[in-house]
Length: 159
Length: 225
Image 1 (cartoon, rainbow over the protein chains, first blue to last red):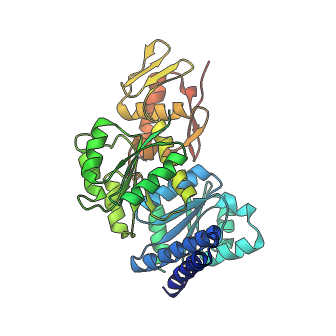
Image 2 (cartoon, rainbow over the protein chains, first blue to last red; image 1 turned 30 degrees about the vertical axis):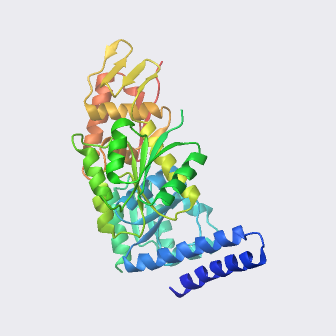
């Protein structure tokens, strides 16, 4: 809440200064402030309504988005990506095992800390070992039913 | 022809801004300022997609969806719900059970909004209209399928599935996508029906090579000479 207020106050101060000095609007800075404010508001709401943020990572973008959409319809705040990005606080990661080969050392550390739910096309011992190595909290074999995925997310967030 | 979108929001400035964003992306956009107005507009101009504000003074999104669905079992176009303040997971489940395609939280990045609209429209594109793939001719809207001169006797879902595969001919369509688009919203318990549908399609076509099973992933239509 504190950071949300201070970000909005900054945007207002920038606008007021530009207005009194007759300067051109610092559009990019304002856009940055607003993006940050909305992001912070999102965190406040997520805490208030107990909304769970989920990141679905799959090198097949279409499949990732389809899964994310299904999760959104179940009330999760789900995003899809075909590449690892910085994680938000308490964000649950659903990771296609195929993507793990492309991760650098820092990303691997971040992923392990997030205890991802690992999804894989094959149930062989090597995949399982790889999932364990990634600190997986759950391990699902494709094709994954949305309900099973939701159940895994529930298990992950209740621990 | 650009896709026709309908934006429904009771805040005029929000509605206009959303419409402007979509127009700049090349869509043709109508605006309604209430649930009632939206329902009236839909009767005269059927949109390709609707963006619907969750909370409006006259009715909330689930009521609009209920009115739209009365009669048919599915709403004939995708609906994306715009939520202002976030709703609890329970509310969103209500939304989907009543037929919403997706959700966008207001204030979401423009690129993300456009990507979700494109995603929902892509599904729409894979539904109606007549298409031909080699000797295969389909018109799911009329419930007709032919292979060469031979009429294929297919039930509604196998026909819709064949249409979906034909639209993306040569591409693997995942089982989840087939379930999502042909069987509607629920994922559970339909795996068996999906296999039966594939069986019926292959049996009717009498040339099983048209439908290739990609193990663990889905199916692909391969046009046969």
